[in-house]
Image 1 (cartoon, rainbow, N blue to C red):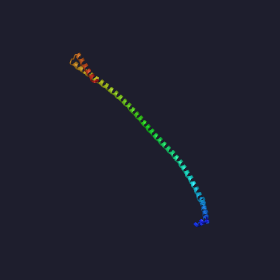
Image 2 (tube, rainbow, N blue to C red):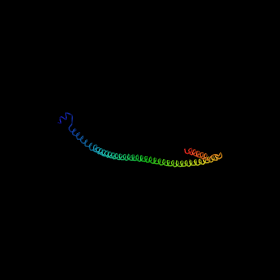
Image 3 (spheres, helix red, strand yellow):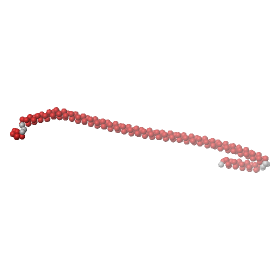
Image 4 (cartoon, helix red, strand yellow):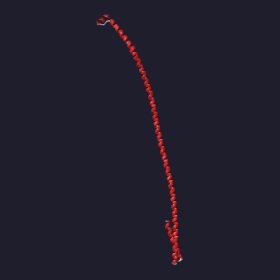
Amino acid sequence: MAEILNSLGINLPVLIAQSISFLVLIVLIRVVLFGPMTDIMNQRRIKIDGDLDSAGKELEKSETLRAEYEKKLADIADESRRRVAQSIADAEAAAKRVKEKAEEEMAELTKRHEAKLLADRLEVRRELKNEVLDLAVEIANKALREQMTPQIQSTVVEAMIKELDNKHLN
């Protein structure tokens, strides 16, 4: 075998020394480079896992806060709608009270005007009756002056009273 290696130009002691050096280099690289690198990678993985857990917790927390915020917004909207409805109801009640008061005042005013109108009518009738009586007296005097018979005088007075009553009652 040494002859085959020599024919290929390979020196066996150098090959063994190089192989041992290569194995030592691999062990040194593994111990010096891969060991700390593996530790760094493990620490990095642990940190990333921790960050992911923390991010998950923060996400849950933000979802909870968002849900609370949306609930508060819905509560505010409900309160706003309730207040608007209450304001509308209050305004309608106030309008109803104002309308009822105006109707009461209008009814009272109408009642007073009707009473005044009735009093005025009675006054006009009384004045008219007095005028008719004065006119009847005047007619009677005139009839007496012209020597009117009592029958004619009575007929004339009754006719005038009836005529004036019919005019003023209608």
